[in-house]
Amino acid sequence: MFSRLSFLAALGILGFSLSALPALAHHGWSGNAGEEFELTGTVQTGVSLAGPHATMKVLADGKVWDITMAPPARTERAGLKEGVIPVGATVTIHGHRNKDAKRLEIKTERVTWNGRTFNVYPDRT
Image 1 (cartoon, rainbow, N blue to C red):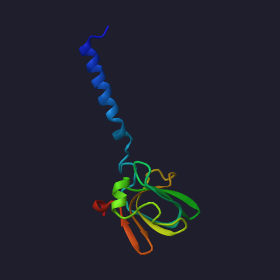
Image 2 (image 1 turned 90 degrees about the vertical axis):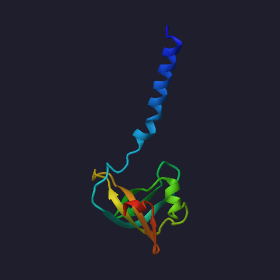
Image 3 (image 1 turned 90 degrees about the horizontal axis):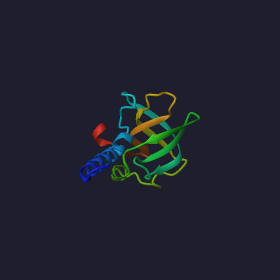
Image 4 (image 1 turned 135 degrees about the horizontal axis):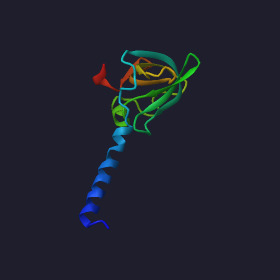
């Protein structure tokens, strides 16, 4: 049977292990190509601030691209909030595409719409 000290140690290890899970889920920039990438297309799904990163979908050249932006609070500070850019609007996305060419995903630094630039990662420009 576990002693109280063993139980507390096991509980502490479990707590520490679980606290690392969000960090493991965050992919950062390592999955994206180093070179800059730009895409112009039509907004299919507007900006969402629901997840760990703001997202939207853009149609370009007959393909729907996943646009991954900064975390919601940072994206909002850049002025890009849900509903600001309407579905059907033409946008230009600037960032880094996924290293896997089969994944149509861009980790986005800037979104330009209607003459306005939303710089969601100003420290990366």
